[in-house]
Figure 1 (cartoon, helix red, strand yellow):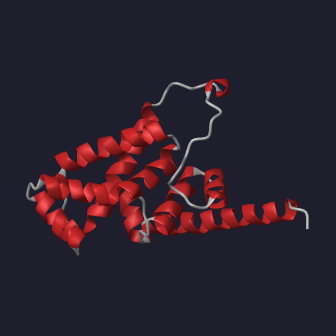
Figure 2 (tube, one colour):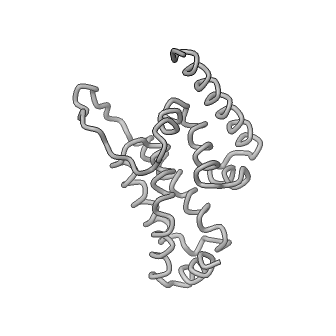
Length: 173
């Protein structure tokens, strides 16, 4: 309820309310951006561009209750823009070998499993299971039919299950 009040205040021009909404959604935006881009610098750029675009388009927000999904939709579009603009390929030997800390996921196995999935499944699984969006909301965020969301959700689960079974079969008893 408080988020809705903040969204109404932000839409009426209250910059502090907008900042509070952005702060509440920062962790969620990072997780969504990371699931698409897989690179902290690109995620930071996408989040920054999302905040700016959301502030500029705040007047277009129709339903203050839907601020979170509206913001997620803008973020996903910004992530796809970054992917389209990416033209430079970095050779593997130029990548740093030091580990990159990731506060986005607590479970390493879950993160590794998600990384093995195609983006279209990974993003939907993260939006559904981690962010708690309903299939209809995910469809709106990604601009795809809800039936497609349900299909990708089922296929993503099936692929995770298959990967889990294959891994279990490889482990010695």
